[in-house]
Amino acid sequence: MTTSMDLRERVAVVTGAASGIGRAIARRLASAGAKVVGCDFDRVATTEAEDAELGIEMHSCDVRQESDICRVVDAAAQHGSVTILVNNAGIGMVKQIDEVTQDDWDRCLDTNLRGAFFGCKHVIPRMRAAGGGSIVNIASNAGLLPRAHDPVYSISKGALVALTRSLALCHSVDRIRVNSICPGPVGDTRMMNADLDKAEDREASIKQFIAASPLARALERMISPAEVAEAALYLVSDAAAMVTGTHIAIDGGKSLGVPPSPGS
Ligand code: NAD
Image (tube, rainbow, N blue to C red; front, side, top):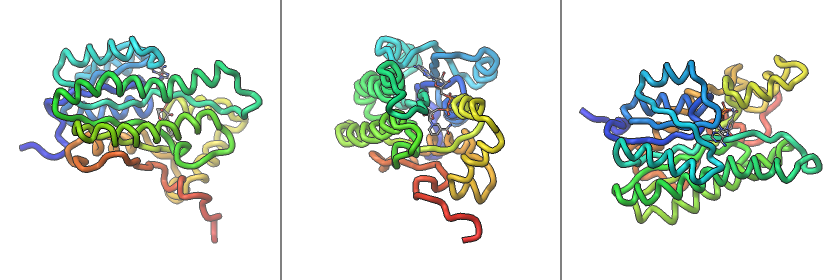
């Protein structure tokens, strides 16, 4: 018997699948039955061997290069119609405007936005030919509300949410659904660890991330990559057949605004 979250017979491409949220999504979709083709700039041999046990096939790819994305989509199509794409590859950029170089701008926007756009470009014709598909863009709570510490990153993620809505409207006629997930703060990822490694006091920094999100504060922990992966599974599955152009904020309520101070 199949359920609405059964992904057997589906072929999925997941970018940035070597670590963190992307790896959790690749593993969750593979556990639900999908043939997952992952790609990453910076591959990790040890975890890749574990992931291969779930049938996850990894490719080297720089999502900033259209030809790389096209090659990965072509490789995935060897397994059947590609009807799922998760644009997850991304980088952070904690800099104020006066410190931002043109290279910083290009690296951040090219990875977080252009990579996703060209991923969509190369799967949409295949999804159309297959009678439909589902694209999930991993944006951020930074795409929903401005933050004081990372304007370039926030711009990239805000634009990714706009891209989601635009393509959802353009391609509903093709039965292609396009949604985004806006997480934050997610622990146990390379991006988060890189931020924490730069902090003078790692424990204090973890507490600050938790304090900025009402539910993370109440539960006294960060969000896990697996919790974001559950939302991705829902969005790519038939359970979300009527869901398009929207976002799910897996941010413990962070995008609601300033959390109440303790005791108030
Ligand atoms: P991560 O660093 O563990 O994962 C990102 C992956 O993308 C890495 O494996 C990296 O090698 C890969 N990547 C980077 N540039 C690439 C490129 N040019 N081509 C191919 N792969 C590339 O970090 P994460 O936290 O799991 O981030 C995943 C996504 O989630 C990102 O888009 C990030 O912006 C978003 N996000 C993360 C958080 C968080 O708190 N961790 C919050 C909101 C949104």
